[in-house]
Amino acid sequence: MAQSFHEEVTCPICLDYFNYPISLGCGHTFCSHCIIRWVGRTEQSCFSCPECRRISHRRDVWPNKQLGILAGLIKQHSPILVRTLSMDDDVHRITDDLTLDPDTAHPFLDVSTDRRSVRCGDVLRDAPKHPGRYDEAHLVLASKSFSSGTHYWEVDVAGKTRWILGICEESLSRKGKISLSPRCGYWTIFLERGNQLQTGALDLGTPPCRVGVFLDVENGSVSFYNVTGKSHIYSFTRVSFSEPVRPVFGPGDLDGGRNAAPLTICPLVPRSR
Image (cartoon, helix red, strand yellow):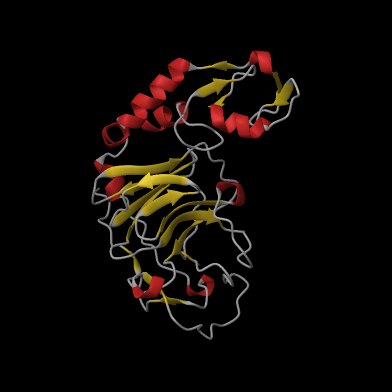
């Protein structure tokens, strides 16, 4: 039910709550600033819908005030709604015993011997060449991939000023520059400069000390939770996973020594029988 609430008030372009929503002739709705950017400064009287590509005329566009009011209310009460409707106790008893895959780690990254922690080093390791190794992005993948079911894991991010967490499609190239966007097969949130928790250009608020990641493959969603603050951070919804996905971790650079703490996959309590 919480997932349904979020989907109904989320703009398909910016993936945030609707801001002054505009409905098109085809029935799809977008934030006003998103559709303005999509249409651009063209003087043409018609344009294609970003979702269905159906042609809409400017005269067919109207503000959806009721949806805007609903989006504002849900945004205001989102933490309460999510905890009440979806963050039941079972979510926190799902165990995915994740470990990191050293063969995917960028040579600057140091993976612990138990493969549960990763930090950025200050020297380039003489890592064995591997086709699945990141050679530019400072990232590492989990050893497991997921193609069905629901999965939950937690990561300790305390003491860090920069990090990246999320999932990515398994078959993506790990060579060269990586774009961390859903369009490119990455669904992530990240921390920059110690106080800017974001996904893309969207500010997500106060950084947590421990992050929970809940993946629902069949329902096409990946959600992030502030475990210590017991609140919802962000959800990617209406995702069509066309292939297995793997958890992705980025400990960030050393940030002048301020970001030396590792990212650590936390041990989880098994689901009760």
